[in-house]
Length: 153
Image 1 (cartoon, one colour):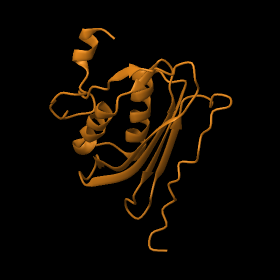
Image 2: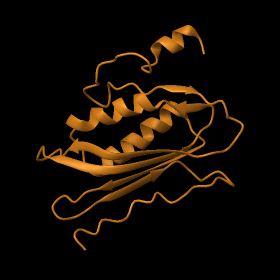
Image 3: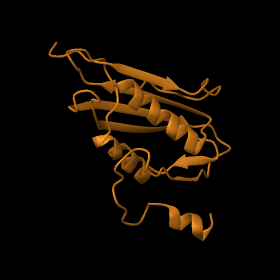
Image 4: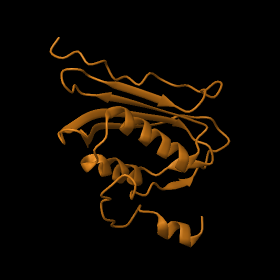
């Protein structure tokens, strides 16, 4: 990695919180194990966005799994990107798929999936799932482990 590439990373320096997902920067770093198939999991238990109609907050538990190629997703930049949705108005489906597509575009993984487990809106929980292609042969992919919404039962 060149010095210029290191300076552009948000890791290790103070940065302003992005106001929108579009202005948020996702950083990638070289994968030192690029010849090995393995799974990376990011768990985001307190994701928030806004309903695009009412402006009320929506809450979700996101699970992001990916098999890295040449690049790893840098976690501080993911935190900042995820936080940029706090004032973003979009439906559950759009937020979930948008995040998955953006990460896949930035790091070009061998495979990626995202599960968005949304808390009820209007009494109906909505779960949204998206992935890129097929799981690489032989890759261990554990269940995401997020129970379906059961309310008080």
